[in-house]
Each structure stands twice: as C-alpha cells, then as structure tokens.
Length: 253
Ligand code: HPA
Image (cartoon, rainbow, N blue to C red; front, side, top):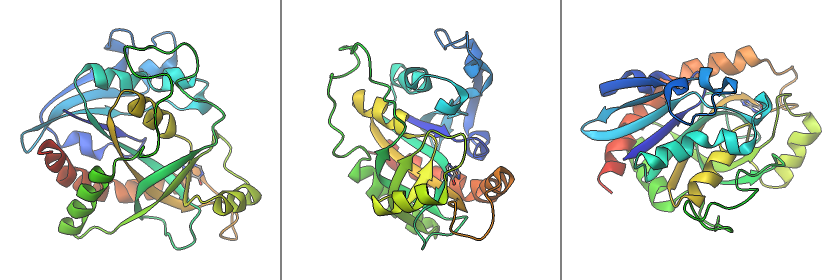
C-alpha cells in the first residue's frame, strides 16, 4: 500500500483516484479530536492503475500549535492501514538561487531546525526503535524511480536539501543566507516530523517540494502568502501527473 500526503493547495491528485472513498479526519478513531486537526482535511482511499493508495489531503503544522507527536498522527494511521512507502509533498521557498517558482524538487535529505522531534518522550517499541537511523531518510531507490517517472512524463525534477523552520513567520534574509551556508536548497514548515516518524516506523519515504517562491531577501520585494498559494495552484496539476506516474512504479516494487 502506498501513502501520499498532500500539502495545502496541492489536493488535485486525490480527486482523480479510481474507486475513491473519503473519510473526514474527525471520523477516524483516535484522531486527536480535541484539537482542530479534525477539521484540517480528509483521508481518501482509492487506486491508480490498480495500485491501492491512501491519501492524506491536508496536514497539521507545528505553527498551528500542535505538538510534533500530534502532527505525525496521520503517518501512524497510514502505517496501521498497511502503508510501507509514503510520498510527502509540500510547498517550499527556494534557497538555492538556481531554482525558480514552479519547480518540482525531490528532497534528498533534510535539516531539522524545528526545535522539535515527534519521537521525543517515551518510545513505543512496538512502532520502532528508540534511536532510529536517518542516514537514508529519503530512500534512494524511490528517488531513482521518481526520476525515471518524471523523465518519462517530460517533467523536470530537481533534487535538493530541505530545511524545516517552525514558522509561521517567513524567514529573514539573514536566516536564508544562513540556510544556504549550512547546505539547504529549500525551506518550508512541514514534512520533517512526518519523515522522522515514517523512518521510525520502517516506512520508505519519498518527498517532493513545489517551489512556490524565492526565499526571503533574494528578490527585492516582500514575501506574500497569496503568491505561495497561486504558484501552488499553478504546479499542482503537474505534481498530480507526476504522482500518478510514480505510484504504479512503487506498487511494482
Ligand atoms: N519559507 C517557509 N515556508 C514556505 C516558504 C518559504 O519561503 N514558501 C512556502 N512555504
């Protein structure tokens, strides 16, 4: 079973599934119902060319006030449903000066600057080890398959390192220069807690960033959330096409 997590505004992929069935998060037993996570989205099951998928359309972020543990509830729900490989998507700012808004970038590795980790606290040994390895957090074989799928579809797919910042304020120009110096190509406010929880569970992770804007201080103008949403809308169909091509390949793994 393949899992897919769609960032906000990137939901187009979920609409195109065969044998589609939707469950609002609020109706899933154990979903942290005392919080607004229940209103944040829905779980959609279906198939792509016969390959079963479970999609989380909408995610929780640390900046909304959730703990890292709450943010990864959905990933653990995917594991309970038999997901062994998960594709995470997000919107991100470009730190790498060669990127452009509208680019799709495969995440090769991450830098966790959230100041939080979903595995802090007592370890549930039934889920995974106390000290999980993160030396190949984004599986090399899945990345190779994703690149092959992109090539076949004629979609350009770059590759880079994602730095997670807590938000919700965008970064300062000095923070972006710092991120570039420490080796980041992308900056965003999600994905890293999910990648950590998925690795803990022994799941393979593929992650794709949609570059919605050049990061702070690169262009001589302010960052605007509307620009982020508009670029996200412009890329989401290309992202959906790429996901549709990737999923059956993962199904054959
Ligand atoms: N910074 C952080 N998160 C983001 C950005 C950004 O520039 N763009 C989209 N998500």
